[in-house]
Image 1: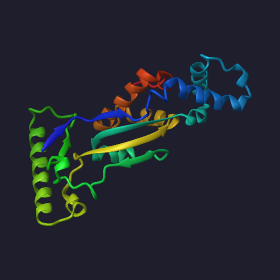
Image 2 (image 1 turned 120 degrees about the horizontal axis):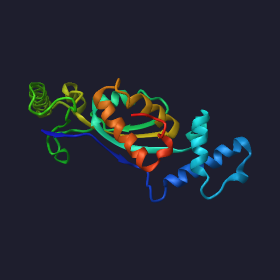
Image 3 (image 1 turned 60 degrees about the horizontal axis):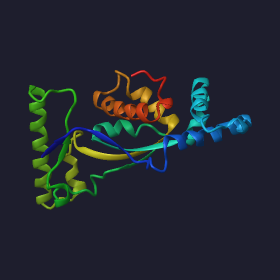
Image 4 (image 1 turned 30 degrees about the vertical axis):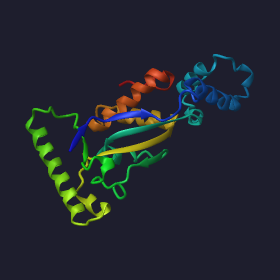
Length: 210
């Protein structure tokens, strides 16, 4: 059994699809609305995007998109996929047989962020994960298929999901999921994504308080 922390990976090739290119694409599209293409300059895109966000004209930023791979527990992905305007590709427990060598013949679980490792709650959680792994691998040994054996897999099972959203939907996602009212593990992932935007494309999230 393996226990890991969640993490994210950017999937856009930022060498060829930079922040500057994304913002320029948005500006080019947005200025079509006002027929103000003549006002485009080398450095005008960021200010234009900031103004359309401030004015509530956020449909314009749908022309830009960002893709992340998120490694988290399956319970979190059940919340992520409720966001409708997005594309998802997720690791499948129907077809992934974790008894195989490429998975190390073991299950990987995501460490809960709300329990310390020396707490009783964490101890009981870890025992439950060990039991789930034992019963899953035993079912496979007894000739169950992966899609049959997955019935004993818990929410804490590690999964990978590739998410593509346009920038307007990412803003909606971050407003909801960085809230202190969000599930702690969902918020943990959302803040990682927020921090990426804050560093790489701050104009998209400058008005979002975390």
